[in-house]
Image (cartoon, rainbow, N blue to C red; front, side):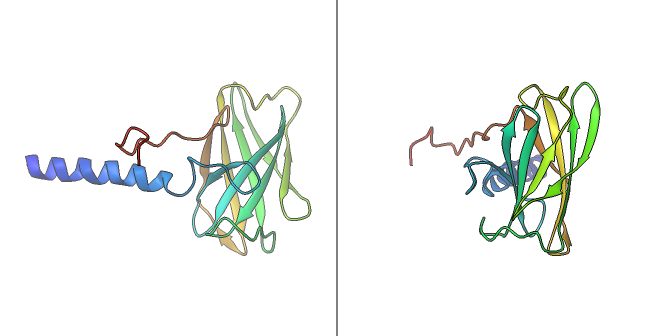
Length: 141
């Protein structure tokens, strides 16, 4: 029983490290915050107190695509507000009402589809920040 528990704990620790290996600890190519909802990445770039851009990037963090794509962002704060984002050149723009401040504590839930591939809902903690990775080396490699 003890061995099973230790094995489960090891996999949980490894899983959390692998989740951050997808870029949550580094800025994206557009200076934003990365999550991986499936076979692609979402990059959220704040553009104001209540607006942001969302790029739909390939697995290599390149080639933003809006083909067969859509983005819906839900802001969870004192209230929950859903916003269908509008397509711009090679990204989506999400403009929330003025009473929403993306710099305050809350959560963004991003539902995205890229090239007809629907991703899982990904969460971005507000205020947006890079995730800290504890690799057990104390910052020394």
